[in-house]
Amino acid sequence: QVQLVESGGGLVQSGGSLRLSCAASGFTFSAYAMIWYRQAPGKERELVAGISSLSGVTKYADSVKGRFTISRDNAKRTIYLEMNSLKPEDTAAYYCGRSSGVEIRPNYWGQGTQVTVSS
Image (cartoon, rainbow, N blue to C red; front, side, top):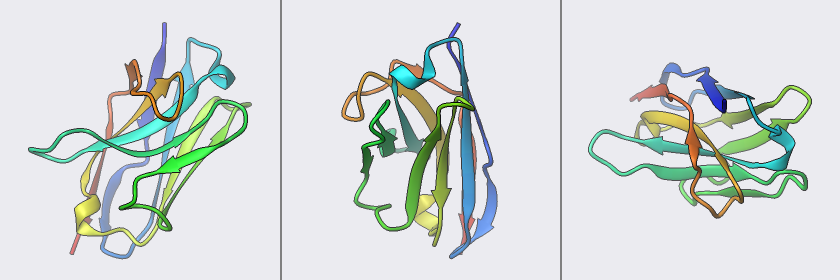
């Protein structure tokens, strides 16, 4: 079955960096776009960054452009989210999802990893 397992979250000071990972199994990883979303308490889940299946086309939320970088390693069946210059407003649970395209909401999600940025 499809499994997505996020890791790498934690507590970091404002201005710091974290790298999130999402390990995938149970499907042909290279055939799907992969997307990072986040959800802060009391807010809707929002797209952070997405990467297409083969061409590596990326999409970012305006709020993270220039600070976050999404990448994928199809051989390792893993996607990454490199987060730099973190701000308190980046505090949220981060989820990876499997999708048919970077513009399409995922139909499978991981369990999430918490990122907390202190001021």
